[in-house]
Amino acid sequence: TCALPISRIHLSLPTGYNGDTAGCQGFLLKLNLYLATASPVPTDREKSYALVSCLTGRALEWASAVCSREDAITNLKAKQRVSFSII
Image (cartoon, one colour):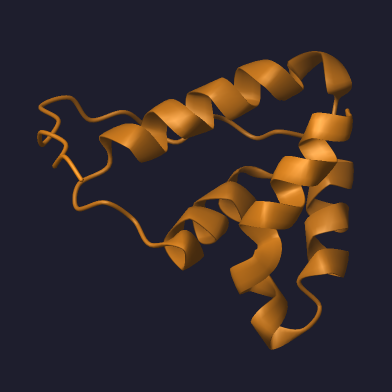
């Protein structure tokens, strides 16, 4: 595989996402850009933590239900992609 260059820009996590379908694509774009420029490259667990830390309202309620078990957080990234894709 090809190593990605270390980014010289530092983005902030996107502001809170509340589950509104109109803002979903923009939120995911901002989150993906943040994660793509993070250094060192975050683990899947860290990516999941970053996602959850951005959620508010009904989106946070959904994540709370998904993460009710300790080990569920590691699978959150895959689950959120499926759920957000459906939206």
